[in-house]
Amino acid sequence: MKELEQRACSYLGRDPILYMDMVELLRRGQGTVAAVREDGALVYVPASRAYLLAAENTQAGEALSVGLLKPGQVAVHDPENARLVGDILGYGQQLECRAAAYLEPLPPSAGDFVLDPLGEDQVERILEEFPGEFEREELRERLRAGVMRGLFEGGQLQGLAGLYPEGGLGMLSVKPPYMERGAAQALLSGVTAWCLEQGLAPFAHIPAEDLALQELYRQLGYTLSDTSLYWLGE
Image 1 (cartoon, rainbow, N blue to C red):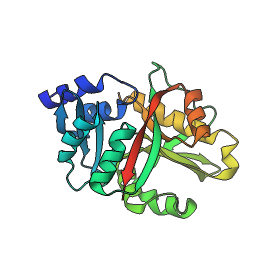
Image 2: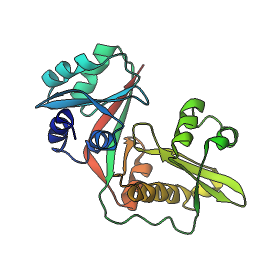
Image 3: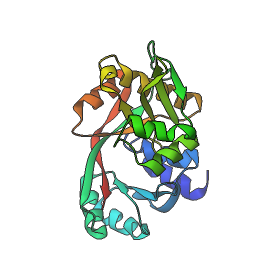
């Protein structure tokens, strides 16, 4: 690990649940350190042009924000700096999330469902069967990356889930008849297990208002952060 990454991880290690996203991006080689101080770090994700910011206070947050160059979205790991960065960038959209990290040594069970990898050749089928759920180019890129899994029954795709470009679990969509049959739990369990097989530490960002999804992650064995992070966008 390079010196800048080591310095960033030294700070991020203060809260391994909340900052699991930033640590994993650096560990996986999917993120780079845009700026780092003793009291914070800024990580850039080339695949999505997103930044992730963790700072001890707004003074550190303001100093680190100098490194924000034409961002897509920004994930800020405390409310005070979320307001600061939103004002600096003129961003009006904000999604409050809870961070979740899987710290168990063994994967959760996917139950009786069988999950299969999804490939780029299935992008049109997914867009047709799950209208309005995905952006075409992001979905195509995720399928090309090999990080999407599908739940099939009777030869039909009934649900899917995978990893976002920033590395977190999500992109979950299940057809209504299968929600009550535990398909969402099976999909998230399967993607979690796949992460562990690949040597990845599974994590997720869960909307703060979605209490049902938070509870589902808890049932799978995830530990949720005590505080929130905030995704900012135009």
